[in-house]
Amino acid sequence: MPKVSGVLQVDERLNLLPVVHGSADSATQARHWLLEHPPKCLAIPLPPSFFGPVMEGVLELPNPSIVMQPVEPKYRTEYTAEETDDEERQTQTYVPIDPCQPVIAALRLAIEEHWRIEFIDEESAEYIPFTSNLPDPYALKHLPLEKFATACLPWLTPPANREVIRRLEHQSARLHELRKKYSQVTMITSLQEWPWLRDRIKTDQARKNRDDLLTEPDDSLSAPERFAVDPRTLIFLFGELPFITAYYEHQRRKLDDNAQLTIDGVKHLLLSARSSYLQDFGKRARRITPLLMTQCLKYMRNLTLMENRLTPDLYTMVVAAQQIMGDQFAIHLVNTAKEYGYYDDSSPMSVVKLGVDQAQLPDGDVVNTVNRLPGPPVVWRSLQLRKSPEKLDQQKWAMQWNPYQQCSWPPEDELIESFRTRVFERAKSIMGADLARTEKFSTSILDGIDIRETLRHWYDGDIYVKVLPPSVGTLDACVMLFENHPDPRQYPWRTTWYAEHEEESTLAFFATNFGAEMIGPGIALATYGGAMFLYPPVKIPDIWRDRSLDFTDTLEDRLIAAACKYGRGRHVALLSPTAPGANLRRLAKRYGKKLVHVPLSQFNDAMIQQLRMVHVLNGKEVRSYASHFIRKA
Image: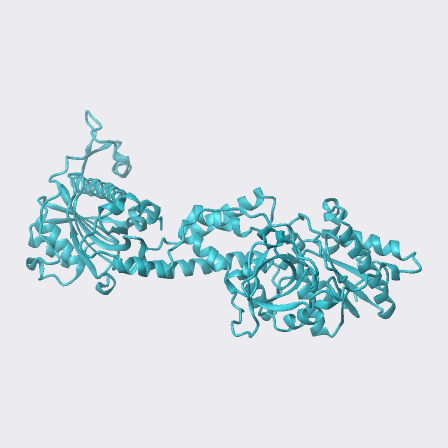
């Protein structure tokens, strides 16, 4: 057996193992240390009354639960009127049955190895937590436990509260009793209490009578009771994120001793959030490329280091995701982080809902809560994210929709008209490039030196210049196809919108059913599959009811045929992922037109995905408040 470090060893019979409560890294290191130095008896810093419920919860892991006990005695003779206020509500202490809690991890190991288990904290009607800020426990992956604990000593302050000191005295007296019965005793203690408990034990070794340090248990205290936890509030129970906790449990079952579980868990969380985001938004989702993921991880790392941490917290991850990949991805990241894959909803126990130092009991009463295994203090920060509306609200808005009036949202009209102008300009440059020629330099460089042709004829020493004649013809028709061979079943909404003023185009498009996604009262959302623009605007019939276009077979054929029929210029700009095939060129030739292809890949993917989103308003009066509900993709 490896020799125990003098930092952790009090004497040959007693070891103190300092841990950071709520840390998966600390739980992993505690488990490894206990396997290397197995004790005869494992001492736990909890009152004996918690033994039964806590052990039952440990045996049911990985399904989480919570053990709660009222702080005040259950028999009272006086009540005050102030106790009815929210600030004077009842307080209960609790023990989280968390797989990543070092004390719980040690109990699981003790049960597997058949060690003796003793709960040695005092039974008291009052409990005062003792905690402080500590360095990031991720350092335990590169430092031995004793070196990490020693490095934390300058940050540890002695307890000033009398209740905390009394608990340490009681634990010291109980440890002296245990070391008389067992040859090897190891106690799991909080890192904040570790040096002061050690000093207390050293001081008490010289005392002949230690019985006066033991406090009598309060028989009037209510017995602890175990509850199930609402899965939506597990984030307030676990020390780590529920998703990371489930990831640790998954690796534990696989017997994977990977030292980078914390960082791998963050990467796995981002990948799972990406899958959920893509599944929810489908084709209108922004492409989350590996390059974008890399930028997000770098931004996350920089924010983490600015906060003097080694691993990111939830706030840091969400801020990085929001800045790099948008609000909706950040929302999916939050929802994914709250998922715990090992939750069993078939448990017969009553369910409590947890909050920030509060809990709602099964009978509806709200109580204040104090963790008996407190981790470092948590700082709560706010972040503005626009989440999707509830299903009941969407159904209500859909029932109130007036099918006889609809209009667009002006900011989106301006955005897509600006993009249409860019496509026109790009198409005109392509038309001019087809007529460009090269000639030898004589008296003027004309439209610039042709470097390629000059290098090709370097042997004769001549310089060649470009000649770009003005483009022939005008452009007034543009067709945008955002995917190849769109499925008509996915784009059932086909309509023609007419310009409200001279700065808008006549627009015909096919899109997804806007009635399937209501985002606000009188506000719906659809996704373009393809669109045709005529600018300056002209009055045309609805192309989807125009019988002269019934010879077309597909949605894209009908758009191109309409652009060729109603466009006045000789050319039609076509924005699409791939170049038009022979059938589309024959279709344009039928009307005496020529297609000018502009590759979709020449434009930013995020901008394209934003342009594909079209918000439909149920009347012009909705424009006055639409900005409160419309959000970015």
